[in-house]
Length: 90
Image 1: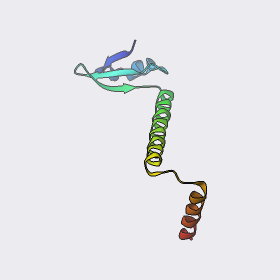
Image 2: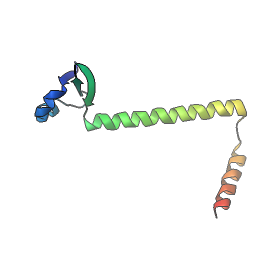
Image 3: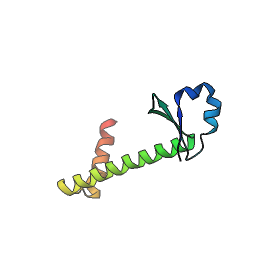
Image 4: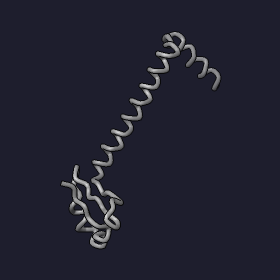
C-alpha cells in the first residue's frame, strides 16, 4: 500500500524520509491532489536505467524499420563509410 502524506508533513521531514524505502516511495499531496514523490535513490537509478533501455530499444526499432523500408547496408559499405569519415576529420 503506498504511503501518501500531505505536503505539510514535510515540516517533520525526518519522519517522512524514514518511511521511504526501496520499492516503496512516499507520495506527497497538495490540496488533496498528488504533487510529488520521494523515492529511494536505488529506485531512481533503476528507473533511469529502464528509461535508457526503452530509449535504446526505440532507436534500434527505428533503425530496423528504416533498413526494412530503405534497404540494409552491407558490412563493406559501412567500413568504407567509417574510413572516409575518419579521413575527412584529419
